Image 1 (cartoon, rainbow, N blue to C red):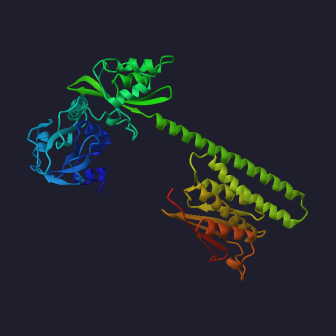
Image 2: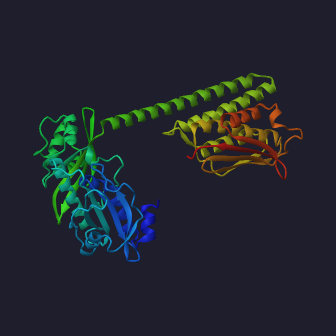
Image 3: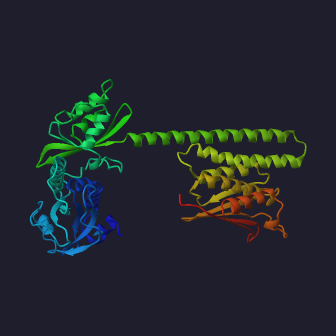
Length: 487
């Protein structure tokens, strides 16, 4: 299905500023749908001037839907939807007409012109369709919802909603069903939904919210012994379209204010309320868990460095050159693992930018090389899971060490690490211009511990493919192909 931007660009004459306004409206019009108990469809004039194209759709979470199928992308000719034409031509909300029974259920249709700012042009029309099949005498909550929806629709028609200065609405912002307070012009509560009242009860409120000043009530509950949060007073009074959180006794409540400005005057505000205590508790647990994991990685890195130091000390005390070389190789292997844990100790998640690790392994190889070898990386490994990063770091250490130790002896040369990656596979080639492979070389039967480690890690642990070939022009190529998830 094409996106909102695709439809607007392809079928309408709106510019980038118009599109930004439409995006802001659509990102927050769930509020209007829920208050209206109605489906919303946004129609934009087609660029040929002869019809309308549906660019966005929203269903209510507070009532039954009218449209079980998506209508986004539909194009209708002018005249087919008379209420849309009237709202567009007369720049007013249109509510004329009897319920439509064409779909088998009674549907009340209304249309709301969409204006960009107080002095901007009209961009389209919202069709608001209400399923009347379950119509009954409305409760006070429903009457408050509908009146608030009417005020909000008028603000859309006047270009006052969405709020240009408001920060983008977060996915976890309070919704209508979480809890709703309606305030008058001076910030007194005229209506409190049961969920909103319950949230304030958890904060310690024993009196009724209705009739009280919300800002003062909230401040007295949560800030009796400390300075009052300025955002709280702006939000709780309904004077600014902002969000804030209040906390008391372990209960955390999120507030979002929607000022209601109709006909040039502020008539009150809506304040959406959500109890986010459990959500914040889980977030704190995750932060604690992340900190613990990073500390574990830090300690593992320190322990590995201690092991490496002990191995180096032991190597110095040996008189056997073969034993010294074996311990030196062990130091390098332990060091490559320590590098991964050092990076993980700094990361908030078990994912690492592997390029930094690769560069440090390459530099470590150059430092211990007898020959004058200049390893170089070409391409990017990207982000890898820790479970993949550790074995790849060890593999890279072994291959680079083999290249500088057996490929060049005492002469200078070049080693390249060529990396390419697509959505689900990592390809790595370690190529050198050294003396090349022995004529009788066989990867399956090689006695080299380093290559045996590489084969076990690549084929056994990472389920990848490994090949070692003679390079054209001299030297050796080691080719790795490893499945990885997109990072």
